[in-house]
Image (tube, rainbow, N blue to C red; front, side, top):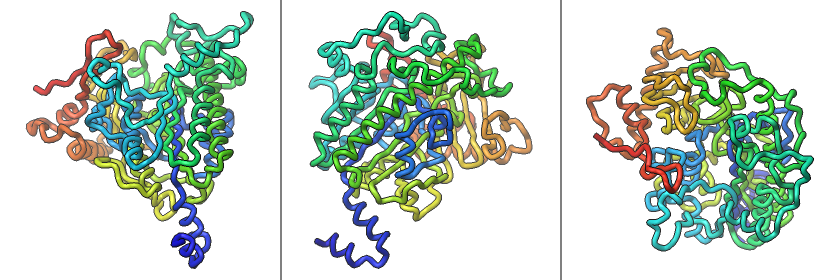
Length: 521
């Protein structure tokens, strides 16, 4: 009755209408793509790709032009996203680091305590297998009442079976034996029809969860595997794009020192095949996102559901002459972010406010009117969504500690520090060996493609030092081990000390020896 009275007393009808609608937001659907480059989206200006469902969400919500992930690798980025903390604080930095459930509280745990039904459908990347034997009562659920991932899909296929693919249709090999095969240079579909494909299974399960919980507040973390390598798509999607139409960025001479060996022997034809596969996988993902968005609409939940579209990190499609994330360049760190919350925010808005992915957890809780999750290192950007502010942060930060990279950026400048004490890791070695301490400074206004490193140019010394100090100060204020920083180190030495990951138990398989365990000296 009080809400109704407030609405009737509103002096500005639109403002009070938005307030009253906002009060009804009670559900959250986070759509988390895997390796989706923002530039391969219609809403972000790509006229070749077909992403009508993501584009529809952008027309109905707020699109961020300058959102950044806090790590360009899946496990670290996802841990950061779920907690609102930087990777060095979650202590999930490496690809196979197990998520420490005792030291981190996820937003799902936080919301479940407050009565919301929670579900994770799709990719998880908690790496619990690393500590498989130490959990007396089974693996932790990290706050999710329902978890549907690959194991459930495989069980579904065993029970249902799959429609046979004719021999005349060549499909992606079960065990690719070469780098070109792994990268799907021949533009081959997976050995599934759409109805049997994993991506479709996850989308249908997400839609089913929405329908089954429409009468109770819920938090759904829907995480498709696409368009991650090998850029999977079902047989109905083959030949959707002509590889010859695929753009091939030129890169610059400065890229050559950093190109992993595995990418050097590819032909232009193979490179365009990779990009065609990626575009097709993205279009297939968009179709499945449509299934989820339709379920929200069909169950009458559009007015009271917060929808967020993001990707865990970006992807380089031959920018800087490579196919991966694992870098600090814009294509890997600058991310898609689209937010819709019923009619609470003006539709079709585009903002260039700087935001980080650590800001997403506090923003969700702010919109829901829930108590804050503590501790978090992000900051709610609700005032930007509401149009009350046009700016959010002056600087953003991202970290790839597998290769000891750290980055600070603002709208004009980007500074990257690299210890260079080993060649690039997890299969991306350059063959040139360790580079030694390396600094990068880019003017994003004049050089958006990041082709010219200004770090060694004397005329940019002042800007170089200012950005370096911002990065060092960030570590001092936010790194959990900062109190133990050796004071006698130079600034470079301090950054190198902070850039060594402290991850414990990070291993590539259950039978392997733990690697990259930090031991203070």
